[in-house]
Amino acid sequence: MKNEIQIKPTSGYVMLLVFFILIVGMITGIVLTESPEFVLFIPILILIIRGFFIVNPNSSKVLVLFGAYKGTVRDNGFFWANPFYTRQKISLRARNFDSERVKVNDKIGNPIMINVILVWQVSDTYKSAFDVDNYEEFVRVQTDAAVRKLAGSYPYDNFDDAQAELTLRSGMDEVNEALENEITERLAIAGIKVMEARIGYLAYAPEIASAMLKRQQAVAIVAARKKIVEGAVGMVEDALEQLAKDNIIEFDDDKKASMVSNLMVVLCGDKEAIPVVNAGTLNA
Image 1 (tube, rainbow, N blue to C red):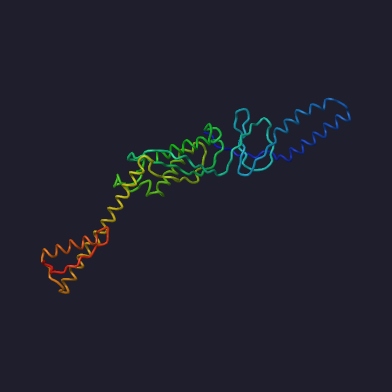
Image 2 (cartoon, rainbow, N blue to C red; image 1 turned 180 degrees about the horizontal axis):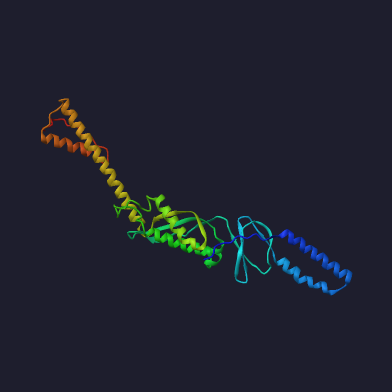
């Protein structure tokens, strides 16, 4: 497999001077000698004109002579080369690719929507020009394939896979690094350098998004209730210990159970407690 060969062609300004000298010589010869033989300079002048080309900053020209790769011009400026060269322009600028949102299945089979933002540039013009048919289309297709493979390697979250330490939602740094490595490996054949690759959009597919939202809300409610109960139990324990310590009231088992029940209802209820004034005795 060949790699890029950088060449420096002749300055275009030198050949432009030669071009004008030939024109002046041809006109002078025709005028002074009135000989039509100087008309033969015209095909030479046409060939010289065909050899001129310009390379803009962050651009390149791949030169091919009758099917043989001769080199790549990366220097910007005005140049002249063999007029029989075919010249293919390849941009060396960094490019941004925002892929379409695709529906894929994560590791546990949940359908999700995902896309990737990729920053890339051509690093080897030979591979980009000759090792693939269309390097821009190659970037698009291989990026899409890498995203699909990545999504199938991790669960979206750890609701269904509690053992998963790394998920698409929680492990963004690690997932993005894995995505960048995967895309870099795939695009190396086309001489593409991956500057950055990261997930730009990640969500459940519309058909299960509502159900998954309810599940997340249920998990959040259960966690909040658990925290409330833990706090309420601690407050009840403190209240009973303080009442017993100060000898404010003595509790038998029935009274203690009744008080614990009332306190837990007050502390864990969704609504504010409504006080009830007992006009009799506690035993009434």
